[in-house]
Length: 127
Ligand SMILES: [Zn+2]
Ligand SMILES: [Zn+2]
Image 1 (tube, rainbow, N blue to C red):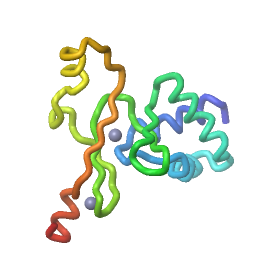
Image 2 (cartoon, rainbow, N blue to C red):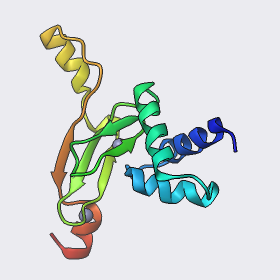
Image 3 (cartoon, helix red, strand yellow):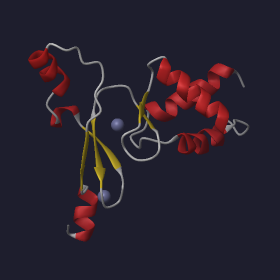
Image 4 (cartoon, rainbow, N blue to C red):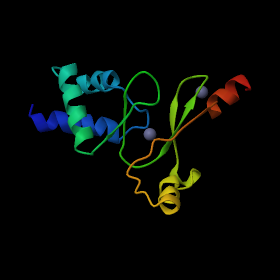
């Protein structure tokens, strides 16, 4: 297995998902495709992908680091079940653009986290 294949496999796991996996979650999934990969290799590749700007590392969700696609979007965490949802760009006004305009600062990334109760929990538990 070539080095670049491992990296591609890890990258795809993040690019095609909405679940904001931790390094351990990525390791468990990638292992199904590349059985001999180590957790250390997964961490190394994740760090490189973050450094090179292909993926984003989110650290403000809970005690774990989560990995995510690069495009700007906001998150919502459900306080009941803990799920972290992507909020569609159309739902959130473009805060970065707004702040740039008002402040004259250049915004390069944004980490917006809303907390509440998700739709599924509201339905199930009548919250
Ligand atoms: Zn929920
Ligand atoms: Zn996300």
